[in-house]
Image: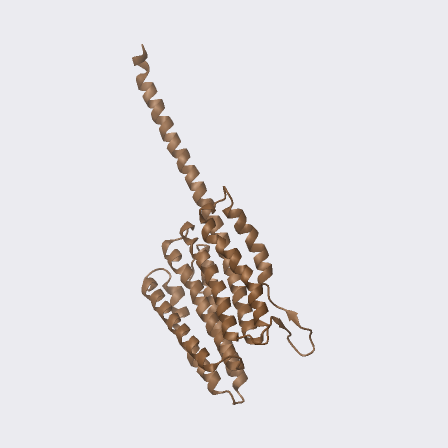
Length: 291
């Protein structure tokens, strides 16, 4: 009697098995999507705070403070927003890496963020002391930035963006950092706050690292869909050092202010382009140009 039902039982078992596979696949896709969204959220926030730490580094290393004023008639104001970004960033990371959170598997890699950001108060205090070395301050900020970049790097594998985008995204963040360093070294050179010999060595090493990264980006992405975005962006890079030489050579020239303005503006434009392209690719968007 039961034999009559064997075919039906077999079909039912197959249906249940297939349904189970579909359900498991749907759950996996939902988990993957949750990790991708959380990873993207943390990367964006880390990118924002890295930018603010870089800006504070330039101000503290060159002027010893983040308190500036636009004109003689205005009061000094603190332009650093690092702490505000930190206060927004840390709770989100803690939520994502908590037990059951989408980035729980990254909790160890992301835990270094907290201790790194806690170093900032000590770096600021040391920079304001009478015997502070601007270049040492600059390097200390760089160590914090490196930790934040490493934390960001660990999350790209979770993203649901094209492989070519995943490949170039971290490089754009490092590209912006090398350019930020060049801007910081340049400001310290122009203002004379640090040893010119040490600054020259630091600049040469940084420019060599920048050139290596440019070559790597061009080699990997010279023939893919990112070419229209990268070619004009990369082509302008070699002009930066020539412009800086113009600034230093024109130190006693009436056109010095304009030379400094042009050099600073060109660097700032490259940094902003790198960050904009990073944000666009992170969202999975492509276009004919970056502006």
